[in-house]
Image 1 (cartoon, rainbow, N blue to C red):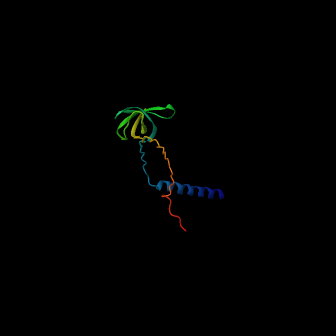
Image 2 (tube, rainbow, N blue to C red; image 1 turned 120 degrees about the vertical axis):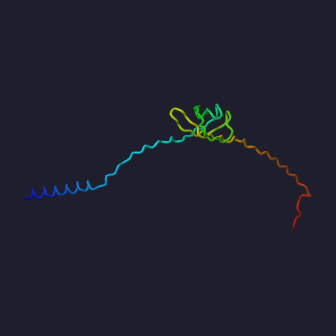
Length: 132
């Protein structure tokens, strides 16, 4: 009798779970593929070569040299010329580096050294009157 009761409880529990699963709405899942936009990177150094609108070659720290193709919509801030310090914002496009922005750094101004000479002369006319 006990075995029969256990089997019945097990069957009822199984029917309850299966019935709950069958009653759920069937939903369709759609898989969307997102194209990853390459992360913008930066490289700073001195201009070693430049062709306006086409390419720029920059020599950075530890003599690391990188060449970039310039994108048609690239933003150029300042006057790019050989030897100027620049920061190139770029993205990888396959095996190419595409510059999306070029910012020319301000030239460092030399600090002017101040030389002041003070001469002091004492005259009787320049002294204030003494108070008594």
